[in-house]
Amino acid sequence: MKIIKIILLCILMLLCRHKVFAQDTLKITIEQAEKQFLEKNLQLLAERYNIAIADAAIVQARVLNNPTIGVGDINFWHPNAAEEVEAIPATWGNGIIFSIELEQVIRTAGKRKKLINLEKVAKEIAIQEFETFLLSLKTELRTILHEVIYLQSYLNIIQTNQKSVETLVESYKTNLSRGNVAKGELIRLQSSLIELEAEANEIQTELNDQYKELKVLLNIPPQTQISIVPTTATTKNPNDISLIDLFEMAKKFRPEFLLSDLDIQYQERLLKYEKAQRSPDIALSVNYDRYGGVWKNFFGIGISLDIPMFDRNQGNIKIAKLSIDQANYNAEHQKNEIQHEIATFYNNYKINYHFYKKHTENDFSENLDDMFEVYTRNFLNRNISMLEYLDFMEAYRTTKQVILTAKKNLDTSFAELQFSVNNEIK
Image (cartoon, rainbow, N blue to C red; front, side, top):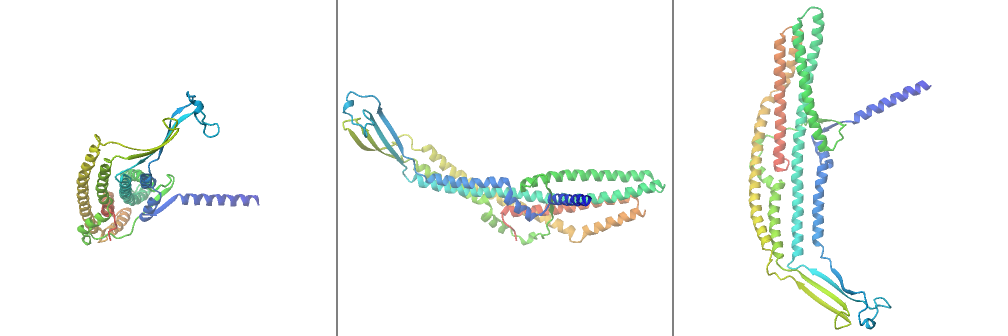
């Protein structure tokens, strides 16, 4: 009975261990990866705080100036006429002379309202800067995803070739012991196998680097194994896409367009605020003086303001005016650069689309896989020479790599085109 319990416990531990390892392998699609990126990317979570910071700046701009209170002219010793100074109240303050002043600064020329409006534009800028940052990271994510899919697929091809050559090597070792093949042929196969293993290791190393970048973007633990499921979505014919429509789409959705317009608006509001700074603020005060003058208890009010004789904020006003002109030129340059970027991505997509369609619509890739199996069988049956087989295997691997690269370039260029307008192209 005790042995049975031990066996059951071991089986349970093995099942639990298998479950843990199964959970450590994460298979996700491109869409799932993008969803997790938006929810868990630490850089995005940190960048969002800039919007909250901008909100706090608006709250601060609404706050009125604090009043200032001051106590002065305090006399702690008895003056000559101390016996004539009344106490406050009871016996406190007997013989003490002092004054109190309460002052409140009032901002003029609508400075407070202008500052609030300025901070509101700053918040909109923070929002668009976040969108720009998000767009940049999404482009990086898509590029890495397509690179991972390419490397996974190409590594699978190399490993398939590797298994075929391993089978041939084992077969040749058996035939060599029987004296049916020359040793030089076996060495040639073993050399090809070593080349395939080295290439597989190189691809795996590059794939690990891409996995690292991907896990950081998705905030996935480093010990988790990850695999990207290739997309089955069909690509859009570039002939059905209007370049003019892409330009209009970018003006509506691309954050840099909105950001450049907001920069102009910010500088214009800053100019209004700086002009308002020419008007001096008014300080209103109320003061109480105990035995400091002619009267025993003196209450008075006061008003003060700067005389704008020398400083009329001339320099800051000029800076604001120049900044408006600078923002206009920057906005024009930004719009021009984005349009050229869209046109370049569009032309790149057309090239990649037609190249990929030309070499995949005729089932060339599938026929190539069938031919590889035929060549392998014929070589085992001694119907073709080793040189012919190895030449075909090299041509097969090169052609498959070209097709996979074309697919990667097609998907990447379409992603870049969509991100250039910051919208899905339907």
